[in-house]
Length: 286
Image 1 (spheres, rainbow, N blue to C red):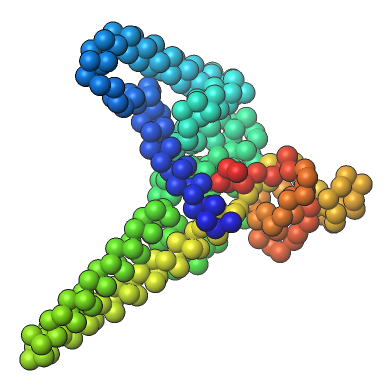
Image 2 (cartoon, rainbow, N blue to C red):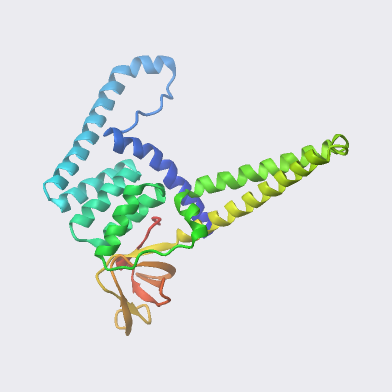
């Protein structure tokens, strides 16, 4: 499961880099030139025409979705933004806009879901953080409590933490090899030897710490958001089962198991039970 989450996350982030350009420039990035020079010369006019049409179409769709949002036609705006995401992929800007449209329409569960997805791609974005807090308050959900030692992880992406851990480990290994090779030269330089030893130890500490934070963030990828109003917690995965309670829209849960159209979830408060799969959705898409 962890390996699958890493793979999906990398695909999500890589796809988001291209889609981010589309959201901010209002048109998709041009395709890579992979044809031979003769083929490029032959197809130049057709390529330019097709690219212009694609850019105009994307810009028109985005402008139409924004216009619908400004006019208060939030369902139309939601449909427009979702169509762009389905075609162009995820980007923090598009996810943020979609979250705003859901929030204005009063669908707080979906708003929190898309704000959480935007935060996944842009963990340090203050606008995403502010709107997510506002949506949680509107849904009467308690503020998220996070240990102080995890605040750095919350502001850093999984990729940056993995790069930090790898870089620190490589530097520590290289320094250890250099110290081993030059041990004769370092024999009479106690200060330099102690400094090099301290640097190696510090790099190992950074590598281990970043790896642990990365693992914590990856576990968070199993989180899901409750969408349905007062989703019933069932004691068994079928409609006639007894309900032991309910979950509020926008509440964060962890999906432990799936059975047909039901999901076994566990809330932050320790409650667990089966809910209909349509009433809960993972922050990291399946």
